[in-house]
Length: 442
Ligand SMILES: Cc1ncc(COP(=O)(O)O)c(C=O)c1O
Image 1: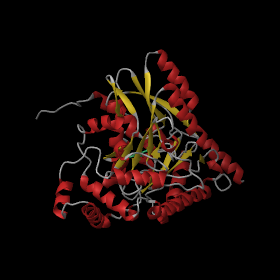
Image 2: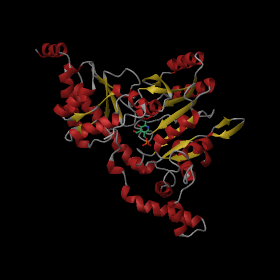
Image 3: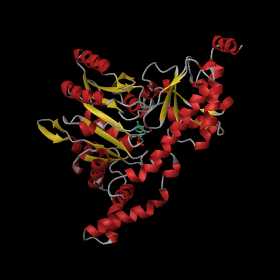
Image 4: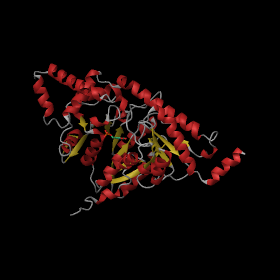
């Protein structure tokens, strides 16, 4: 039988296939509690409401026009408008819930943020001269996408208050001297995947200034913004975007559920196309016409029905879900505290973690290296799964950090998961530290 070799050699240049690896380990060790995958909590999906929401949308469209029910249904079954069919409802939602004012024609309803990323890269970037700057570590959906498609990517470190603007500026200037242009900067200002970090308000303003000064566009990925656990969350970059530098990528996967495969891409810019200025959203739609053609109108109708039902705000509907996720974060932090503070576990001196103000992830810093093999050992021998932070770095980095996802855990699993993780971490502590522990106990 004839076999084929890998067709795109760039596929071999990406790092770990994170999702594939975690899924596979979970299948091999089904008893392991997962702190690995950032899946949303299924108890809030509301998939059973789907027919009612669809009906509500159909009813509203019919009441507002002259078509009969069958004609509306037929239209939903047909190829549809490339930019989407619920843009006016989504525009109202963005204004109500996020303070973002966007004209419906500047919005594309996409097949999730992953499609928004594809459309942005393909529409805006040239593989020879343009550089895409990404947070490091970052969501692999952007870095791996760019690598396998042959775009130039430059990582910029993430600090406790967001991407390092000093290093970014140095890199922009360096690449300009090499005749290259930083075209896009990808950031997740709210509760970043993988670190859980948020960008400070001051940095948000400065980043917008820099975009104006150095003439780049910002890809603002907001998948977790609804899950805010503090008193005040800074506004989205897009809500502060007086220079029109931000392309806003809004996923509904965590806010609603991932299999709906819906996202919104907001672009209000005009761009030069040969000798004329055209709306960027039209160019993005042109690209979309060759990628997914349309976003399924049936799925859009479901979201449309939900927005109509909730007066174009999802805040009240999501209140309990967000409060529950906050409780899970608190439980996880409390469990880390009781298992890993030096007062109760002197061997754990040097283990630290951050306190994310929202989202699904906590970063744990450990005083030793964590490898891919450690994930397997931990799942097999200790019954718990986590993700090494190094999986999310562009080159090297994060070798002594792990990402813990608390979103998919059941409440009663949290403390067991952390007790198991603590046993594994203890097994990794160099003997000297454990000796100190014994000395301490004497
Ligand atoms: C930062 C970030 N962006 C985007 C996505 C995926 O979004 P979507 O399901 O809308 O494609 C994820 C999913 O984990 C994510 O973490």
